[in-house]
Length: 183
Image 1: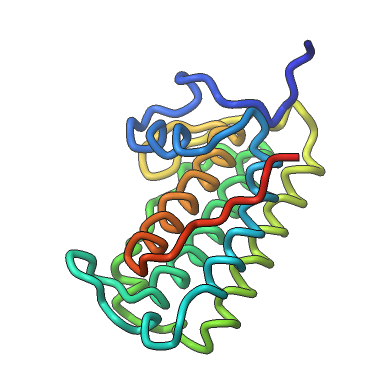
Image 2: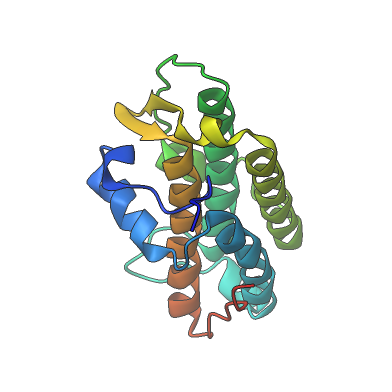
C-alpha cells in the first residue's frame, strides 16, 4: 500500500502533547475524508440547536454556543493561514493567538446561521488548499506558538480541534452528535 500525503502524522510531526491529543480524536486514516465529513456534522449539529441554547453559558464552560462556533471559525482561519505559510516553505516563526481575547471581545457574534456558514466555507477553503498542495509540501514544517509542526499535523490538529468543540456543544446541549460515515 502506498502512503498518501494526508495520512495520520507520526508523533515526531508535532512537539506539542496537546496537539497529539487533538490528532487522536480524529478517526480514520485520511484527514481530507475526516474534514469533509465534519462539514456534515457542523451543519447537522447547528440545526439541532434551539435559539435558547445559543447564547446560554453552560457551566463549567465560560462561552456560549454562539461563541464556540465563532471560536471554531476563527481557529479554522488560523489553521488555514499556518498551513498556507508552512506548505509554501515559509519558515518565519508564527506567534500564537489569544482565543479568549477573541471570544471575550465578542467582535464577530452575528447571526448564528451566518457563523455556521462561515465555518463551513473556511473548512471547504482549507480542504481545497490541502487538496492542491504537492505531496512533499505536506511534510514541510514550521514553528507556531513555539511548537514545531508539519503541514500534515496541522491539518489533523484542525480536524481534532473542531471535533473537540463539536463534542462539547453536543454534550452541553444534550443532542446527539451525528457523524457522516467515512467514504
